[in-house]
Image 1 (cartoon, helix red, strand yellow):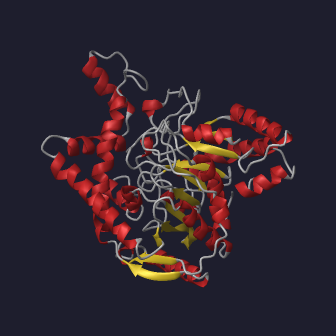
Image 2 (cartoon, one colour):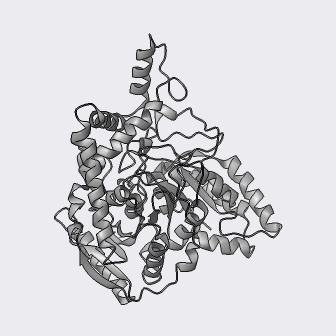
Image 3 (tube, helix red, strand yellow):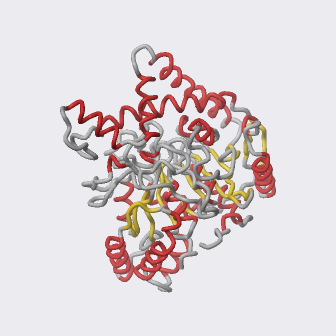
Length: 483
């Protein structure tokens, strides 16, 4: 049962081949057996899962149906879950039990999903390797000596290892797409505002977006259907109708215009990945797509702009964690200043402290115009590049990452080297565009992803292209040895 996709689970439950309770018990046993190798979960919710599974079976017995009714999933541990620890991978929130459900959690629960647990992540979603977690690094099931990517590395590793069929993730600069690429999954970052951020603990509010991670585009369509929609509790939520994502999966790609930016194929890209990307282009050409070279001239400025804007927003968002209201509090503070300093110094890890300091500096008097304001202007130029490109093409295609997964610890002494792994993904966040990564092959036994970007609210188009590609390739069906 652990090899089944969400779509196959829905059919199996509908045909009464197994119950949600049976499936849930099987997967919980599998997590107990295999996750010690991976460290992909922070918290398991066995009692809740079995309760939800029984409820889903009862709903089906009463004639209800639905693609997510009885389907087991897990949530990245920055989605608030009522009465369950929501840690954000940080010592700061190790003792925090959320008093309410995030909108995404509530919507998926209402659709009948079964929550198996909360997955490991880089602390406060800050990282590209899932090594900054207070609960230890997550291992890549394709090679346990390598990183799974981040910050949604726990969700990625758990799904790739067949511990569960799908999971939620969040993407601030590539944190769904990059780990999806490094673990052979399909991961989708929706348009900014498509999925509610209410109850999703913020890193950088103008960049964060929740989305699905699964093995296939079809499964991502199913999970996104349950996650997307307007939320009056979220001031950044867009009141835009949610289409039936599965209905567009089988559309023809005949005449689809695909743009390939020349800037993507620079010296920083592993030539073996470049070859796999070109192979993907040829496959899509066979399906009727028309390929055109395009240019995104301001892409070179994306990383410096992102690493000013995101830390600036983080320094503001994380100021609430001060040892006063909730979260970690130091022992025996001498006075209020000592309480603040020691609580934050003890509660936040090195990468979070680094980004808070960078952000506070960029927002400080005398530097705001030189750094933050300039970064926002560059952000607008990047968006304009995409708008111009989408006048010529329907989809933009390129690599998701410049390299395959690296060894654990290999970039710990050089944070900038890790930041450069996000070079192809962060532009979509800066512009607010939807992006998808899908499996495209292997380099030295490690998975490689191809990234697709589309105009605003065109998630259906991305899923359509990925689904048609997956009907004609088998990369997404490969399973890591031992799992």
